[in-house]
Image 1 (tube, rainbow, N blue to C red):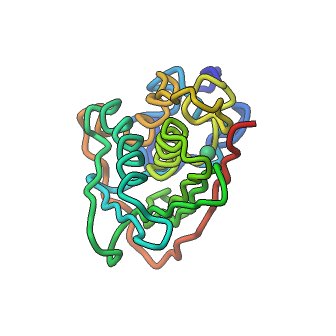
Image 2: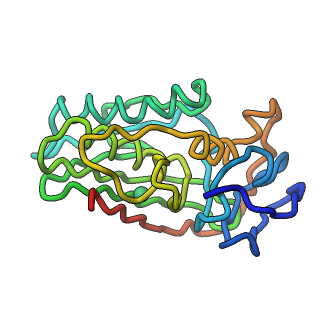
Length: 222
Ligand SMILES: [Zn+2]
């Protein structure tokens, strides 16, 4: 929850942070460490991933559970990250699933959220992400909050905060809008620290590595 006393390291390549209350693989960060933007919960994460560039493309699956109303709520949730990061994190909606980086599904039989993403394990670079947003109950506040939370995963926050005040805490209280806290923002900034420090990210590693897939299941209101 709070920044821990990890030894600050200038990351020159992929670094597995350990010994800080859990391990979080910080992606190919060349200009900062988990101690650059504090407080954060990077050490609590399973991994911290990143998109190589923004905007990321977002596609809403037009299946039987899709509605423009849900889409509007979801975008309002996503926009919380755009605003909090001063548009460093941003997206572009596309009308075709072909080539979409983030695909969004609405699920009528749950209030939970779920994000599955594909990434290169050595660098943490994201390839694609799928977001499932539970809309059971039709509660606008909750749908917006779950959307914002899942988008937090989809931009690279691979795990949860242990602080109930944070957007990325796994549970939420119904009818109480989730907000991006300084902890949340600093965690996202760590994934994209080059943007926030005015540096360019080094070229992503090229090679024949096969992307891997991981899923984060997010409990809903207890
Ligand atoms: Zn979650």
